[in-house]
Structure formats: C-alpha cells, structure tokens
Amino acid sequence: MSLRNRLQRADADLIVKDAQRELKSPARRLLGRRILSLGGLVMLSGCDLTNDKSVDTMLRRMSRFNDDVQALLFDPNAMAPTYPESMLTRPFPFNAYYDIDDVPEVDPATYQLTVGGLAKGKRVWHLEELRALPQESQITRHICVEGWSAIGHWGGVRFSDFLRRSGADTTAKYVSLHCADNYWTSIDMPTALHAQTLLTLTYDGAVLPPKYGFPMKLRMPTKLGYKNPKHIVAITVTNDYPGGYWENQGYNWFGGS
Ligand SMILES: Nc1nc2c(c(=O)[nH]1)N[C@H]1C(S)=C(S)[C@@H](COP(=O)(O)O)O[C@H]1N2
Ligand SMILES: [Mo]
Image (cartoon, rainbow, N blue to C red; front, side):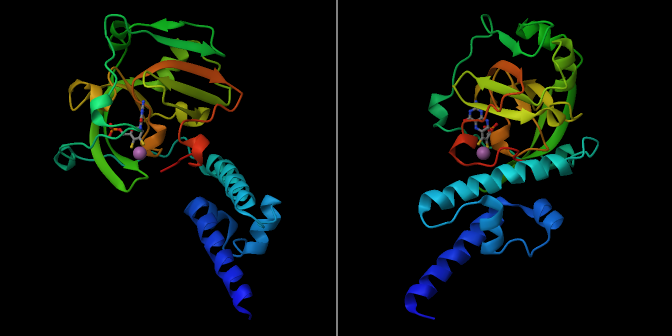
C-alpha cells in the first residue's frame, strides 16, 4: 500500500469509528456489525466522502437514521432505573451553554407557560395552576454527554397529564420546548407520554432553584441531559421537525439514554 493509500485508509477507519459512535449500541445490535464498513456507510448515506462536508453530511444522515432506529426500539412501558435517597449526588452539578452567573431570573409573578400548535385546550398556565395539579416525584440519573452523570430528586406533574389537560393532539409527532434563555429542544410524542416524563417544579423537595431551571425543567430519565430543558416558557405540539439548540449543531436528535 502506498503512503497515500495508507493515509486514506486511516481516514476511513476514523470515519467508521465516528459513525459507530453516532450509531450507538441499540442500533448496532439491530443491524449487526457488518453494515459498519466504510462501503456500507457510503451506500446507506449516499455520500461519497471525498471531503469534510460530505463526511459531515453522512454523519448527520446516520444520526437521523439512528433517530428512527431509537424510535423503533423505544419501549413506552420500560422504566428507567430509580434510586434510593442515599444515592443522591450532592451537590448536583449545574450545566448550561453559559456560565452559572448568567442563569436567567424568571419572575414567578408574571411567569406564563404557553401551549401552542396542535392543542385545543388550556393555552396559558400560571405557576399556581401547575402546582395545583397532581404531583409525582422520582429519583433518577441524569446523564450529560460532556462526561458526567448524577442522581437527582425531582417532583412535578406528569407531562402526559399536562398534555391531556392542554388538549394536545397526542397523535402528533413532536413536542418542542422553548426556554427563557432561548435554549430549545424537541422530543418524540411517545417519550412525551412516558410515565417518567415529568414537568418538574421541585428539586430535592424544595422549589426548583434558578440554576436547575426555575420555574420548571422537563425531566426525562429516558433521555440524555441536553434533551431535558430548563426554564420552559412555551410548548408547541407539531408534526414539523423542530430540531434543537444542540441538535442543530450535530447532537443526535432522539438522544435516548
Ligand atoms: N434552558 C436550558 N436547558 C438546558 C440547558 C441549557 O443550556 N439551557 N442545558 C442542558 C444540558 S446540556 C444539561 S446537562 C442539563 C443540566 O441541568 P442541570 O443544570 O440541572 O444539571 O440541562 C439541559 N437543559
Ligand atoms: Mo449536557
């Protein structure tokens, strides 16, 4: 093999490794290992991999393909692990796309949560109304792709309950969530309706503090950290793919954990 060919080969191996990382274990199990050859990837993605842009396009297509596989494998009745209080991580880490000094201050007196899109029930919610709904609590593990995980205790309203009370069309594909800090993400409807998906108003038995998302964080133990939005101000039910802050920069959209 010439040096040039060897270099190209090393590149190809790196690309396959990247793709393997994108296409996480459930997808690998489903498809078997053989498909993850460079030739297989090229065939699946329809990209020729002659430049960085086509590699990027291929990885994005693999990621969208991975979304479909994860959606197929998602079991709405399977529960994420829960933990005893003795295993709580203290202090629970803070993370956002900015520094802790820049956490948004949401005024509870004027705060409104709006529900838009494919919903024909209650459109505007005030904090007191959310607090008056039946509350649940859970101790689950939050996993951040930046390389840490932590066990926390959240309490709040079952999101499926909230969506029904808002008259949401639960046959729609997506629920998008916009935040007071302009962060946004979106989730698939089966996850929105999962029994452990909670619109949380408390952390560790007290009102959710600003750093953890006051007045509320949508907590999904079946999804990675970046899919768990804090400081939500608007919820939209839609069939149009909404993307997300990190998702639009290449993070996998389904983001299952
Ligand atoms: N509004 C908003 N929500 C967000 C983020 C953010 O920057 N803004 N970051 C996400 C990421 S990457 C993580 S890991 C968790 C961190 O939540 P925590 O501060 O409660 O640990 O919030 C998620 N939700
Ligand atoms: Mo994260």
